[in-house]
Length: 98
Image (cartoon, rainbow, N blue to C red; front, side, top):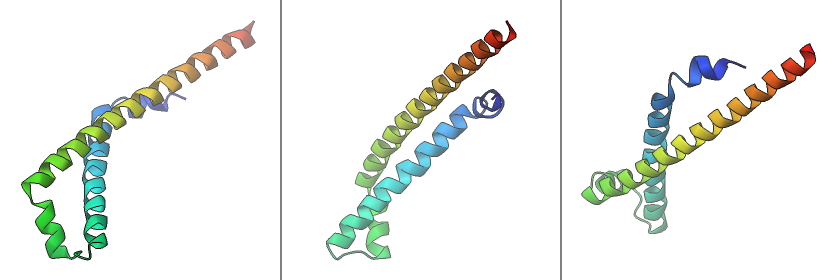
């Protein structure tokens, strides 16, 4: 039950940033790939040309920001759930002692 305190809380920002970088990068690349495939223009040359465009950087920053906020909210909700379970376990333990 104390795994959260020992592992997750120490790596909070590392976990949130890693999640944001991975999802903030994967989602726009996947969406761009589907867009190019739908138009019949999918090739590695076209994909890299779109990815290294300045406009894609703005798109990446938007997705990174969204993924960062999502990871932060999910981490906070998981911590709150853990704390409520821990408090319930403590109260159940004190009730059993009496």
